[in-house]
Amino acid sequence: MRELLHPSRLKPLTGGSMRKVIALVSSLLLVATFASPAQSEGAKYSVYQKTLAAFGSSATTLTTQQEAQVKASVEANPTAEKFICTGIRYYDQPMSVNITVRKRAKAACEYAKQLNPALSTWYQNKPTQARSYAGKVLLTVKSPDTESKYVIARAAYESARVVVDGSTTAPANSILASDNLPKEYEGMILKNLSTAMSMWDERYGVIEPYTVIAFTHEDGAWADEQARTHRISLPVASWSVWIANYAESSGENCGLATAGSNNYFMCMALDPKAALQQSTKGAHEYFHSIQKKIGLNHQNIPVWIGEGAPTYFEAVAGDLGYKATSEKYGNFSTWGFYERFDGSIQQAVSRMTNADILEVYRSLEIGMIAESISVMDKYAGYAMGALATEYLIGVHGYETFMDFQDSVGKGAYWKTAFYDYFDVTPDEFYVDVLDYLKTVY
Figure (cartoon, rainbow, N blue to C red):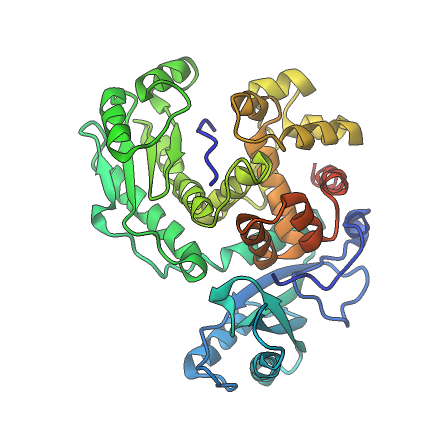
């Protein structure tokens, strides 16, 4: 996973350290973004979330489209026990708006209960700093999960996967390809770019125009010319140099990528199977462009989040069949990580102490400086960042995770915002991540 490090409030009702959440998987309580007071101790749940279409300015009843969305959510979760409807108010709107959004939430839950009388429903209202969600209703559906090993991972996946809705199609002229790139690759790239755009179009809008510059390991000079044209900076003097630096380990597979504000560059493999997997990086690189749009960069967010979030979203968008990010990365290791911990991530986790995990994530709080790439290698930054992201989303939900990033992008100090949204300090969280990883490995 070689690429340039280029990253650019609905507060949970539960409190206390996350260590209480995963002390033992057998007594795991999955804390979703919005928890019902009736939630029982020790229950294991997978979580599904869906945001209903927008309401009219003063409407409090469901439209035909919204009823269809509620029905789809009920039918998609036949074993669901809890159905939570949250009306969302923009944080600086008058408190009187709470009445309106709460009525909308009530209407959604009443319809769900009508469709499935066995559901335990709960409606409420909460503020957000994301304008695109103001006035809407968020559905959170909880179903029993018997695979306790993957309960958090599955909750994260189902929470994040909801936004992969196919709502946007990237224009055919979004791809600028070198002559050496196999023509059939362009369809894969366009498909994955469309998926990426659809994931964040409702929250942030579509970045337009947007271009993917795709090429092979033979096209360093051509890529350099495009980099100058599109004003993309590189971690080395040129693409030619960058490709040559990694030729020994990657050869024709290449796999290098980097993103700008409205484009990303990708050096693709000539092998079709490798190229197919590389094309799923579309969500990764496009999210870097989203990060830039909302004000995130490696000066205001640690690289384990700045790179971990795009890496996790890449896996969700690609839908490559993994039950969990932990399954994907169990046997993975970078050279530096292997030398430091004498094994793959799974092997290392079994031996790690709290001091070890603090070393990993504190080191990955590094900003975008010259040492970033070597630190990412030594501590397997992409993988460890993705695992931490999965855990955060699994416990707190996709919406809260995104609201946290929005807050940092607007100027909040990341450690302050982290505690504000997740009710735990970063150091406490790092130890919680180790506890979590020891349950899955």
